[in-house]
Image (cartoon, rainbow, N blue to C red; front, side, top):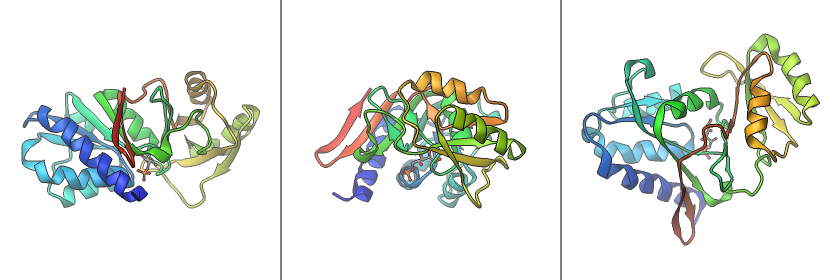
Length: 222
Ligand code: 5RP
């Protein structure tokens, strides 16, 4: 199977996972990226049966609306029942690196609110140690130099993501050559640098379920 077919399989599996539990009161959090896009397209087939969605990016909100799926502001809902999103890497504890698409901060906010975070990914994303994928860090623009110097002190190699501005008006530093042996401590340490909005480690709030696309079928990790 191709990587795109594996992504389609996990998007379909996520729909099958939530379908028995949804009704017109259900609020779904929707992630960002190519796997989340396939989930959005699958969700369109049951759009009349859900209450609303909240989106982790302007791009996903636009795709949802193009299908006629209602998108609410997060402050306009009392709960998010499920959050469905992809990842750039996951370890077996379901701690993730996210933010390859630059939506990490809104993704982290929606994940924080969600009762269940369902991560959908093809099996190329499953790793023993996080950090082969460069860790995205969203930074207030005026703090770019300061944060970069602090990231170098932590042992990383930050690279400015040229020509990219987040939905929140900030910049991204991608930290290369930065194996992450202690995801919880690293997430907290980087978030403690003044000028950092957040970083793409999802260890303090990992996924609850990982639907992993493999050539032998979709595996469910908890
Ligand atoms: C966007 C993300 C995505 O979930 C991550 O980059 C995975 O993307 P894709 O499904 O296209 O492989 O964190 O900010």
